[in-house]
Image (cartoon, rainbow, N blue to C red):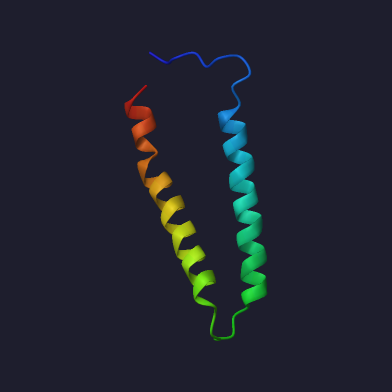
Length: 69
């Protein structure tokens, strides 16, 4: 049985907006980095790695949402 969401609850639309923002920023960063090999600052590499890990974990763990409904 699916639980009713409270009126005014906009978690899905907020998540979609945030994902759109992530996609836009990632595309912008790809353009700035380019395709030619070069050294990137460690903090940029670290941020990219963390972002990839977090998004991958959310995508892989999304099945848990359906398990709890």
